[in-house]
Length: 74
Image (tube, rainbow, N blue to C red):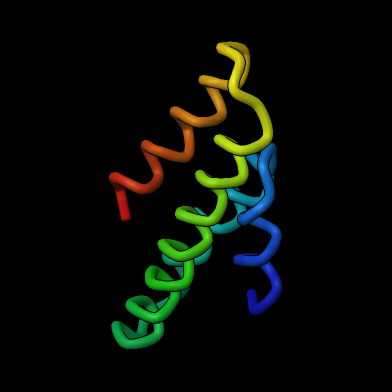
């Protein structure tokens, strides 16, 4: 769990996001859940920058849109 946010910061990591999405379901403590969501938010922002920086062409819009949707959820 500690290393997952760093992996999420890289572009093209949809499988890691699937794992990250499952973690809140097992966190019962609200403080722990709040901390996890803050870490995900940070990773999401860094991931968005990575996606945007990696390619400016239209083929990458799907990945960018996916990260933006996650950002909106958080």
